[in-house]
Length: 232
Image 1 (cartoon, rainbow, N blue to C red):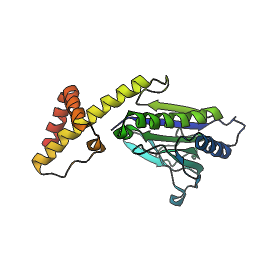
Image 2 (spheres, rainbow, N blue to C red):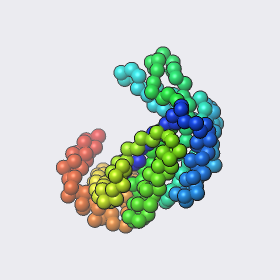
Image 3 (tube, one colour):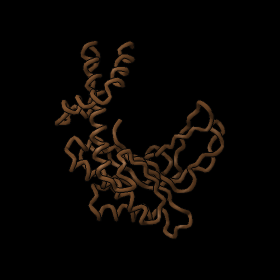
């Protein structure tokens, strides 16, 4: 739970730049723009040692399979403290998969799907959160500059309009919702003598205020959640 940037990077077959060169150039440009710490390039060769990026697919009712890439290349972008690093690159998946999971899927060509949860960068204030969130978006914009087709789903609503007011509003609302729920679950666990509830939101310097706001805004949903969990 928390604001997350989800993205899909696709490399068009007609692009003149070779896919491996594209990954290398994207990493170089992102590093030059000082958007965060960039790891060395890593190869994905279809083995666990190669760092598989399995892709979940749902091909039949009630069945979910995972498709390993045949090959690929990726790197990690670490934009700041308590922000989940973003892994970017390109992988190639087999066009057909075992019949136990169906015959085909949508992972055609060179593609990479990833996400970065930026929510808890907000533990260090708005300025730090803003820098981290925008750095991930700007790194994805680098891919677009190179000719990649990039789909971005930004739960903070900063993208596509670069709306910082919406981003800050969504951060505050999500902080309150998480704090309210976490506080209620902690109280429930303490009363029942269960395992302690852990959440990064407890480290927020304004946790008590956020908890109160969360209860005020989402009290009915939080109460329903604790009732359900209390019956277990």
